[in-house]
Image 1 (cartoon, one colour):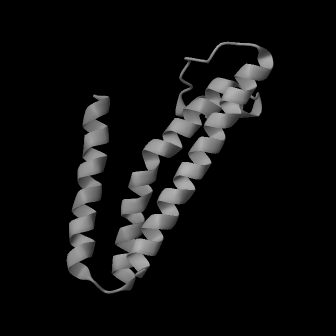
Image 2 (cartoon, rainbow, N blue to C red):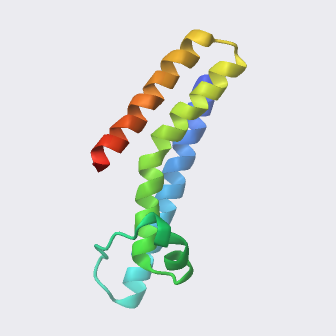
Length: 110
């Protein structure tokens, strides 16, 4: 496996593992409390306090954020890996992909 493939594999694998773990904690908290599945979404600014309070919705929200953010980290990691390999063409192309992804998120919020 070349360095780019290895990095992509590790990032995607870690993102999935962390996301599933957070989602599982949220589900277990709901089950332990005898509550139904939480449908609340915790805003990012409120996450630290909600996580400290062991709110299941906070763990579910963070798990989804990690899952959604994993491809962004993968693309950013690809840029770093290509830069270390001095492959300017792929740095530029991958940077454009990252910018398009970020613009999509920004436009999707509007």
